[in-house]
Amino acid sequence: MTRQKPAEKRAYLARDDRRLALLDVAATVVEQQGWQALSMIAVAEAAKVSRQLVYQHFTSVDELMADTMSHLFRSRYENIRSSIGDSGSDLAGLIRIVEQQTFDENPARVRALWQMITATYSENAETSRMGMRLRHLLTKLWTPVVMEQFALNEPQGRALAWMLNMAFWGAHQLVHDGEINRKTATDLFTWMLLRLMGPETAKASAVSTTVSASESRTPKTAGKPKVRRVKANTASS
Image 1 (cartoon, one colour):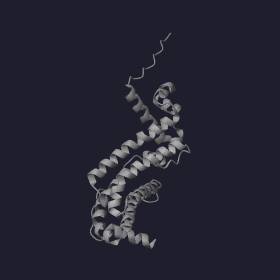
Image 2 (cartoon, helix red, strand yellow):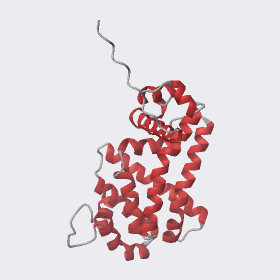
Image 3 (cartoon, helix red, strand yellow):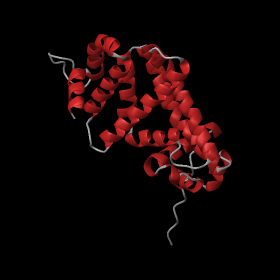
Image 4 (cartoon, rainbow, N blue to C red):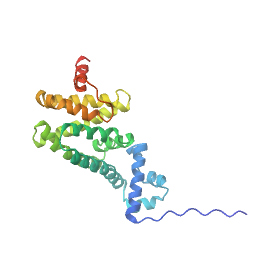
């Protein structure tokens, strides 16, 4: 008679560490399967723990979802805040931050964040309110930069900041679907910003902005700024 191998004991974690580990698992579930798949059972199975343990940390699915939203959002928020602090409020820095935070992020996480902030995955009122609060936090970071660059008041700057975020997320989707490449998306976004800023500001910013936004991907070439080329192609299409 063979002796059955005893089951491995779950590693002991302090309560806060266990909760953080469960949130990491919940974030992975969302990234791989979407928000609609997030549940107590899904987290328990993915974490290889009991549902009872999950309920010890989250009293309801709504709490689990809200805390997972905050968990996913926190790192992005901190990265953007740090990047804005390092880059200042110049247009080139704005474009570089948006590009890096969108294209250099895990595509599954970008999709999860997009669904979260726009609350496109749920009709739950609390989830929608949570998404709106996170959206306001995100746009609050961008508002001072947008106000300065476009000479807007605070309500206008806040609205435009959100619109610009929406625009670049849309560009990310086009790249993800294979309709355009990353460089084209960034060039078009740059062209759009320069048009919004008006001809005088655009003329002063075009060269430095274009070089700064693309220098990490392509070598510098002589000739007209790439923004001019994008503008011409767009006008002729």
